[in-house]
Image (cartoon, rainbow, N blue to C red; front, side, top):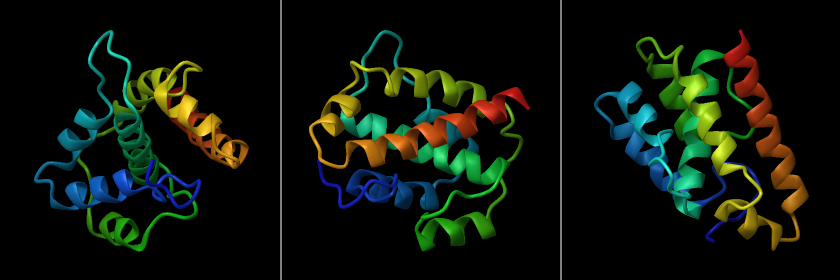
Length: 136
Protein backbone atom coordinates (compact mmCIF):
# COMPACT_ATOMS: atom_id res chain seq x y z
CA UNK A 1 0.00 0.00 0.00
CA UNK A 2 1.80 3.11 -1.25
CA UNK A 3 -0.19 5.88 0.41
CA UNK A 4 0.83 9.01 2.19
CA UNK A 5 -2.57 10.16 3.37
CA UNK A 6 -6.24 9.34 3.69
CA UNK A 7 -7.58 11.33 0.72
CA UNK A 8 -8.30 9.53 -2.54
CA UNK A 9 -5.39 11.01 -4.46
CA UNK A 10 -2.91 10.53 -1.63
CA UNK A 11 -2.17 7.09 -3.06
CA UNK A 12 0.40 6.26 -5.72
CA UNK A 13 -2.09 4.13 -7.65
CA UNK A 14 -4.57 7.03 -7.82
CA UNK A 15 -1.93 9.54 -8.92
CA UNK A 16 -0.71 7.17 -11.63
CA UNK A 17 -4.32 6.68 -12.76
CA UNK A 18 -4.78 10.46 -12.91
CA UNK A 19 -2.00 10.67 -15.49
CA UNK A 20 -3.85 8.07 -17.57
CA UNK A 21 -7.06 10.11 -17.32
CA UNK A 22 -5.27 13.24 -18.46
CA UNK A 23 -3.93 11.35 -21.51
CA UNK A 24 -7.20 9.55 -22.29
CA UNK A 25 -8.76 10.23 -25.68
CA UNK A 26 -12.34 9.62 -24.53
CA UNK A 27 -12.73 10.60 -20.89
CA UNK A 28 -16.31 9.29 -20.60
CA UNK A 29 -15.31 5.84 -21.82
CA UNK A 30 -12.23 5.90 -19.61
CA UNK A 31 -14.30 6.74 -16.54
CA UNK A 32 -16.90 4.08 -17.36
CA UNK A 33 -14.18 1.49 -17.80
CA UNK A 34 -12.74 2.35 -14.39
CA UNK A 35 -16.04 2.04 -12.51
CA UNK A 36 -16.96 -1.26 -14.15
CA UNK A 37 -15.99 -4.42 -12.30
CA UNK A 38 -15.83 -7.93 -13.66
CA UNK A 39 -18.98 -9.72 -12.53
CA UNK A 40 -18.39 -11.94 -9.54
CA UNK A 41 -14.78 -10.86 -9.15
CA UNK A 42 -13.72 -9.29 -5.86
CA UNK A 43 -11.69 -6.18 -6.70
CA UNK A 44 -8.12 -5.97 -5.48
CA UNK A 45 -6.71 -2.98 -3.65
CA UNK A 46 -5.49 -1.14 -6.77
CA UNK A 47 -8.77 -1.67 -8.62
CA UNK A 48 -10.65 -0.26 -5.64
CA UNK A 49 -8.37 2.79 -5.43
CA UNK A 50 -8.91 3.46 -9.14
CA UNK A 51 -12.67 3.16 -8.71
CA UNK A 52 -12.58 5.72 -5.89
CA UNK A 53 -10.48 8.05 -8.04
CA UNK A 54 -12.93 7.72 -10.95
CA UNK A 55 -15.81 8.47 -8.57
CA UNK A 56 -14.04 11.63 -7.41
CA UNK A 57 -13.82 12.77 -11.04
CA UNK A 58 -17.47 11.94 -11.78
CA UNK A 59 -18.57 13.92 -8.73
CA UNK A 60 -16.36 16.85 -9.73
CA UNK A 61 -17.73 16.88 -13.28
CA UNK A 62 -21.41 16.62 -12.33
CA UNK A 63 -21.51 18.47 -9.03
CA UNK A 64 -18.39 20.16 -7.69
CA UNK A 65 -14.91 18.95 -6.77
CA UNK A 66 -14.39 17.75 -3.22
CA UNK A 67 -11.64 19.40 -1.21
CA UNK A 68 -8.10 18.13 -1.47
CA UNK A 69 -7.97 17.19 -5.14
CA UNK A 70 -4.55 17.52 -6.76
CA UNK A 71 -3.76 20.58 -8.86
CA UNK A 72 -3.35 18.42 -11.99
CA UNK A 73 -6.91 17.19 -11.64
CA UNK A 74 -8.31 20.66 -10.99
CA UNK A 75 -6.49 21.88 -14.13
CA UNK A 76 -7.92 18.96 -16.13
CA UNK A 77 -11.42 19.65 -14.81
CA UNK A 78 -11.13 23.30 -15.87
CA UNK A 79 -10.15 22.28 -19.40
CA UNK A 80 -12.43 19.27 -19.97
CA UNK A 81 -16.10 18.61 -20.34
CA UNK A 82 -17.34 15.06 -20.65
CA UNK A 83 -20.19 14.28 -22.95
CA UNK A 84 -23.32 13.13 -21.17
CA UNK A 85 -22.18 11.29 -18.07
CA UNK A 86 -25.45 11.47 -16.16
CA UNK A 87 -25.70 7.67 -16.29
CA UNK A 88 -22.33 7.12 -14.62
CA UNK A 89 -23.30 7.83 -10.99
CA UNK A 90 -25.64 4.82 -10.90
CA UNK A 91 -22.93 2.49 -12.20
CA UNK A 92 -20.39 4.12 -9.87
CA UNK A 93 -22.65 3.61 -6.87
CA UNK A 94 -23.08 -0.09 -7.71
CA UNK A 95 -19.31 -0.43 -7.86
CA UNK A 96 -18.81 1.54 -4.64
CA UNK A 97 -21.12 -0.91 -2.89
CA UNK A 98 -18.76 -3.74 -3.86
CA UNK A 99 -15.54 -1.80 -3.26
CA UNK A 100 -16.66 -0.64 0.20
CA UNK A 101 -18.10 -3.97 1.35
CA UNK A 102 -16.66 -5.15 4.66
CA UNK A 103 -14.88 -8.10 3.02
CA UNK A 104 -13.20 -6.06 0.27
CA UNK A 105 -9.43 -5.87 0.00
CA UNK A 106 -9.31 -2.09 0.39
CA UNK A 107 -11.39 -2.20 3.57
CA UNK A 108 -9.30 -5.04 5.00
CA UNK A 109 -6.09 -3.16 4.18
CA UNK A 110 -7.25 0.16 5.61
CA UNK A 111 -8.60 -1.45 8.80
CA UNK A 112 -5.01 -2.38 9.62
CA UNK A 113 -3.98 1.31 9.50
CA UNK A 114 -4.09 3.76 12.40
CA UNK A 115 -5.98 6.35 10.34
CA UNK A 116 -8.71 3.98 9.12
CA UNK A 117 -11.49 6.06 10.69
CA UNK A 118 -10.35 9.23 8.91
CA UNK A 119 -10.08 7.38 5.58
CA UNK A 120 -13.47 5.73 6.11
CA UNK A 121 -15.12 9.07 6.84
CA UNK A 122 -13.81 10.41 3.51
CA UNK A 123 -14.98 7.44 1.44
CA UNK A 124 -18.35 7.39 3.19
CA UNK A 125 -18.74 11.07 2.28
CA UNK A 126 -17.83 10.24 -1.33
CA UNK A 127 -20.41 7.43 -1.38
CA UNK A 128 -23.06 9.71 0.11
CA UNK A 129 -22.48 12.35 -2.56
CA UNK A 130 -22.63 9.68 -5.27
CA UNK A 131 -25.95 8.51 -3.82
CA UNK A 132 -27.29 12.05 -3.97
CA UNK A 133 -26.27 12.27 -7.64
CA UNK A 134 -28.13 9.01 -8.35
CA UNK A 135 -31.24 10.28 -6.57
CA UNK A 136 -31.16 13.67 -8.33
